[in-house]
Length: 511
Image (cartoon, rainbow, N blue to C red; front, top):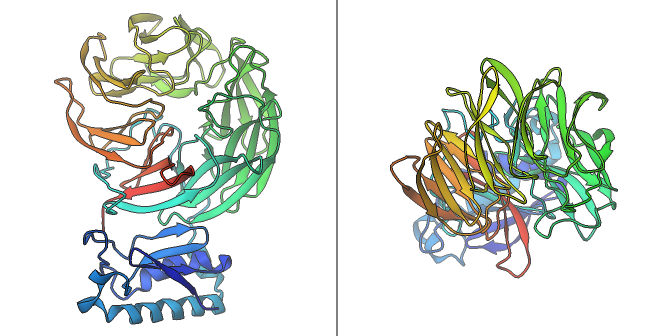
């Protein structure tokens, strides 16, 4: 089998490979190219390095010299034939040998620990202290953009990362299918694409929502997805390695009476148990499922009202608590027994964000919602009490605590900084665009994304708004950024070509 060369793209050869050989050939090309620091000049002499690839379907685009790219001629001209011969021969040898050990070595382990679950390692939007991802990137020049690969369909699930794999859900309107996708975190290669449902879409959702908005959870060698389908909440377990369906459970009825907007809550894991939040008038509960078989172990009954928040486990006052807002209240539960520890009334009925907390001060924070607007701080000790509140609404997106400050990207595209203990507003700054993605803290910087694909990188400080840089990826972003291995992972959409297309984009320092 020889590679078929399909033209060029800005001075890069497009190599189309039969699908079975694609995964193995991709990494070998990256490793066997004679000069991994070779630079192909294009678009105003901007470096584009060989160790960064782009995939379109089963085609692989990698940098090389080409007669159409005049800047690549001259001193680098001799590189082109050598590179093409090495690549072609390497692909042929690998395909003929078909070594299973090599194939396995290029796939991430299937049971590695999860590194970026819902809202990050601590569930609070913060990367670990060792993470120092880039603050600046540029899709046009390729600056710090490792890859940009297409994502089929439409979805608002954020990237979840485990064992070097990225998991997303998506819904394809044309085929009426709901799917789970798995990508290689290092290369962007699509490892598998598993259809979970054909048909059964909800008859009505919010215009900006999707039929695949819940982010997945990973426990060991299993990945779990939540869909609303045929007027039920459905939970499915798949193999991390292959995408093979392991079990499928219709967990609860979906039946909103007032807000027929679809689903918005995501899955979380507590040890080997899967936590599923279902909140409509037909059925409202937090379910604890056995991850091995899907059996319901217990449930926490919730108010029979539609809401969309995802719970989080936090240690407050030396005790683990399951925190959730919605249903006109903010509540802390014992995650093991399900016993309610405390509750505080809220002005709003509906909320969407995940709660955050200050470990040092034993204060928890929530914001919403609909129909009223309120951000509130609750002191949790022997009893819970409302410490302060205001009339700011951070509805779909979550808040974030950084040191002594609380930050919220509120309705109207306004970024707020409050004193976490007193609620004093230190400053506010109007940015632009709608807001759905939650802020992320990494490397001492806050990353704030709007629905137009703009990400502001700021230095957190109570002394005023300190913008470092702003970046653009596509023209639509509803999902939160994931951080792993010094990289940022984005799910965005771009409609500049006239057709909307989603992409998974990895941003990491140029090597």
